[in-house]
Length: 494
Image 1: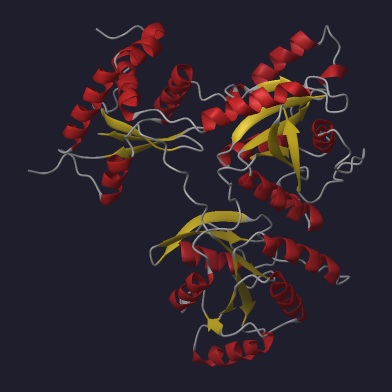
Image 2: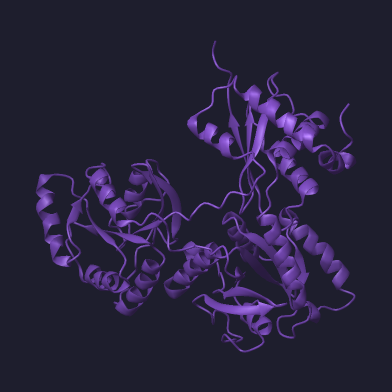
């Protein structure tokens, strides 16, 4: 007989020995199935209770930069081995900085496709320089792509000066070298002073292996970006669209005018780090530039401000998403929330300017908010006033709750007992006369919690969402995104 749903949390905590026995039995049953080396590594280290595994070190970042239409996105697709980046035979197609996990010669890294730097008809080289410098600052190493058929241009030389100033390792890619005749064109790029130009045809794949070998030699083994010191103050990113009060909130919690506040939206361009002591505990707050519209629609300094905001989110452990209570939720607001969740950071939702709301209006607003934030009902929400400081003291408990969830690990025995009870009460629906069976589950990592389920067949997205919802109901995870992946495994052939 299965345990009633409302008794599930109590049942899970009453019999730890049963949990351990169940885990051993399920692991033994897995021996009948085809498992790869990655599966065995996960099962070998992912089900102990001794301590949480340290979060993976951030992957080094290799940025692909260059003028528009030199073939950056084509090169990115070639390196990835699939068509990911948008490619079109006109300059400026890529406006967003897009990151992709990549691997070469056994080394994993983040490959970043950046927008080409637009020089308008007035030739504003100052804007080119500003944008280039910001893009370069976000990388651990730079793959500088030049069109070998055109040769070095004035814009290329301007970027070279910025690359030298940055001190970042640079690998020079001479693209569009489709044959021996173009090799001579590539040799002209020695004049840039960046060392050997690596002749490549991103379109046909010629020379990309040698280019990547050089890039791996230049790339450090661990990223200098996104590193969170384990014993340092917890890092909090203040994010939201322009003019919702992020800078005012930082000044209020800091107790002084640390950053410029102006009614004009977009005053903050660069992330500002401030060490703040709240309730006797140090926190690092990062005030970020407001995320305006879709990043690929932004230009100039706004475009790179949005990149630096993304970098601030990636460096943080938890993000406070500031929303304006005096206006309805906008598409920009939901995009900001999605950006934080997709980055795997803990979340706190803060509704600013709540003190301006009429007392009679507040209950209706609460119900509207519940509908608007239905996808993130698991995130703690606080109603505050950044200007007056009203209820800002509620931020710290919410931050601590989200971070605790972000760090939470469930023992493998307890997790499998939970799933056993859940599946017994609510089995996966039949599809084509077959019903996938969950064989085993383990928590692969924390920050954010990531679960891997071994099953005999594919688990539908709706059922995975159902498992996630019940995980939250049973174990909390308030304020932290969680991810569930399924590995379908078949029995060994006799």
